[in-house]
Image 1 (cartoon, helix red, strand yellow):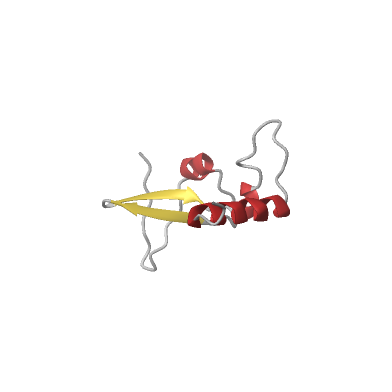
Image 2: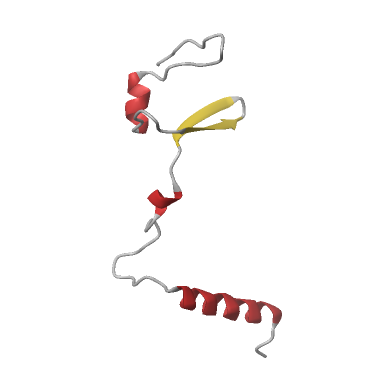
Length: 83
């Protein structure tokens, strides 16, 4: 188990092993998730890092026009306009 001391200003230094486990380097941001009296620390990720996370091998990218068409079709299906 790792521990560090909290200063008067509420600051602490994350132990080296914790930084390594999270892949943190100088300037990175962290997020805190509070659950039932426990706190989880995770590396904050930018939206840019999420690009392609849902892609599947061999699947072609969907264009904005195709997305708009699918949204429109879903909207008409949900209100029964195509009957």
